[in-house]
Image (cartoon, rainbow, N blue to C red; front, side, top):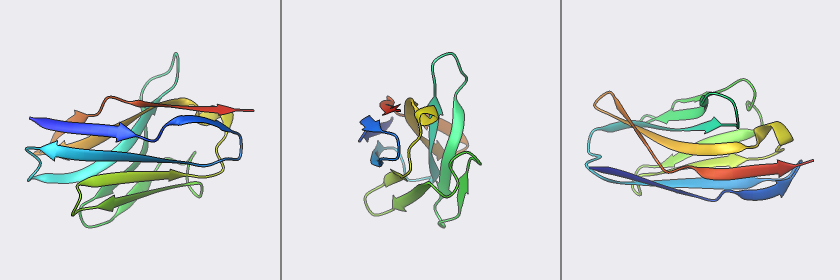
Length: 115
């Protein structure tokens, strides 16, 4: 069983910052990538950023230059530093982990950006 526990969401004004964290536990010995996705009301879930075990990262165009994904392999934790937040960043943010080509999901954390 794989468990992903996300935290750090909240309400912030436009231009502000938030830091999300997600800790993985359980059967994660073959975990090779972690990431963040988000889903706004009425929209499909979309990629925000991913990071593989070697450190390579991938970002959605909409967050490049504003968000930074990082990973602490010793703690099996992934972080998402979000700066310059915009109202359109409002969504439920989900942590993900790729293990043996299967994607596991955390419970989601709400991020709300007010204008």
